[in-house]
Image (cartoon, rainbow, N blue to C red; front, side):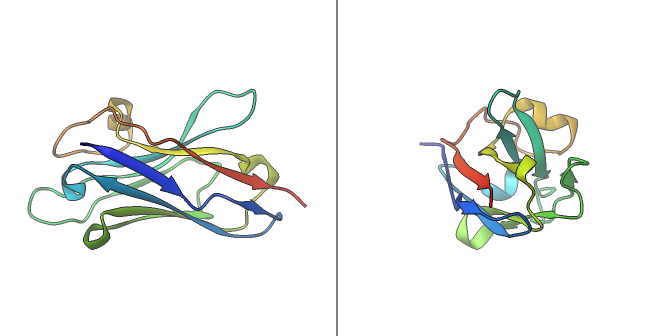
Length: 131
């Protein structure tokens, strides 16, 4: 069964840091691009970051970051742990949202997926940046 499970969301003050985790199961993480999205209250969902799959022979993948998070967020894949991380530094109140990891086809705009796109979403984890 293909599954994505996010964790790590919390209440954090402005300027703080968090690391979100996306644990995957049911597919080869190295063969698929993984994206992080977020949806703030009353706003549309937006793509935050993604990491491309390997080329079939390596696990290295290129990355994408939305302009609003560039320089503050870092995406990382740990194939041994079947987990993708999103490290978020210098958090701002406008980063408050439910964060999802996913493998939808619109990832192709930013990231290459050797194995295609599975159209699977996690349940989300809440990040609340507030003093």
